Image (cartoon, rainbow, N blue to C red; front, side, top):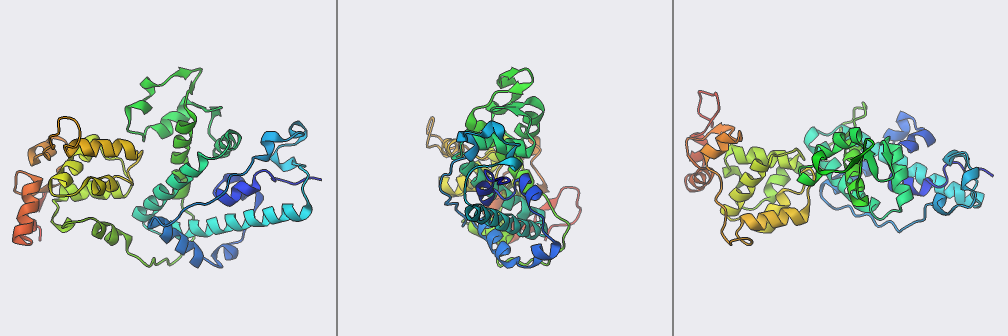
Length: 355
């Protein structure tokens, strides 16, 4: 007896965004909008880093199926399980996909800052979960995403599309082995690349308007999370922080500038590492090493000085005419004189004082 998509159903509970879910289940708009409160709560938990996946390992039925060659794809699965067990798996998968669609509606009605933050955080959680899956399912997921691959080697076109966002030199094509149009990757690297695909999927919008009001103002909370007086930061540093919080690519010069600035005004290493967590291609070990180096805890033991305004201008990072010669001087002036530092600053091209 056929059990359509049986091998995939347990995975749809974990990864309800898989494209095969839309092929298997169809929902009306009323069904999707019937209960979005729980979806909103889940989105908030993701944004607050309060979501942890506790799924237990499962076997991919197709990996050890004795009649695999006789199947007509996943739709023709005839694995021998009871009808009751099959329909239970089907029901759980359907519920997970429906809940995901509700989350997608909620996220689609948030601003870009929150949508990006949600996608970055959840994609990272999924990456850690996928690493625990068997190879056969990981390759099935790549097929579901439409990636052109041969095992863990990926076609150069797809590689360039997603690896361009990786800032490490290891990801540059010139440092990769290319054979017959395919780039060799390790298993972990392949999953790392899939994380970028998942982030894109999580960022996709649906055109369903919904009045969504989250319980927490996450933009405000993000600034309040940082120690010391963020309101006294010069605009160049606020701009870099904003880009990092939104998961945007920040050049190496910008990353060095914000890290050295924060270290020199009293942030500890842990606080600075946290600032980079939403950055594309965030690697905690590498980030911690680099921040400790800037803080003088490695190498020659000398703390790096934050770049001057002249250097920030040469790097293309200056966004404000502060009428000082160093970002830290601006910060100290603001601390000692209230809002004097702000009043003496002008946006480039403006003729009016910034108040």
